[in-house]
Length: 183
Image (cartoon, rainbow, N blue to C red):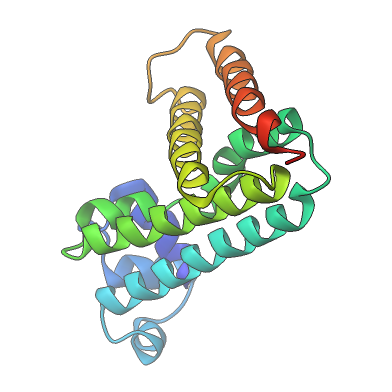
């Protein structure tokens, strides 16, 4: 049922999605949906929790590998991460835009992303301090969003621009991390 809700909210937006549509898409009876979720807000809350858990798992997995990665390899993984995660958290954008608590949802999602990226950066470059790691993480997160927009054709692009953005990210991270790798 949550997958159906996520698909619908990503396609139509939070406000336009109804409980009846969620049940129909899930192939369930409306009563079954209401047994688990008393209203659409409860469905949305469950989706937000699910999406945050996916983000946390991915960043924890990345942190485990970061010590063995070069700055270039880490840059490539980070720049692709949001693109590959998008299908698993597709309704998060719709939920962040429409909910009355959207600022809190957005801040939680961004906070987890920045903390996860910063942790991987600090593992890859142990001499990097926390504040600088968070600043670099914010830049990388925005680069990830731009790449996702380019691939989805939501951002101005040309055929070679995504590759150039990847190259820019590698150069940026190498320049920022290499000085802190062996300190």
